[in-house]
Image (cartoon, rainbow, N blue to C red; front, side):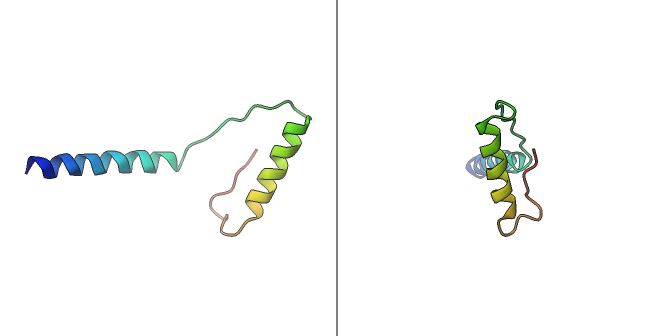
Amino acid sequence: MKKMFTKLGLVLLVSLFAVKSLWAQVTVLGWPGGPEETALRKAVEVYNAGPGKSNGTVSL
């Protein structure tokens, strides 16, 4: 019985971390107007144009 509760607790903990990562936000710092910004904007444009991105797009 104790093993079952331990496994259940572990599964719930892992699930919590997995769900929390779905709403993660990332801050990327780059020189404004430089080649890093241009490359990042192009990467975001290509990513958002991919299939199935109606609910998971990236914004700058």
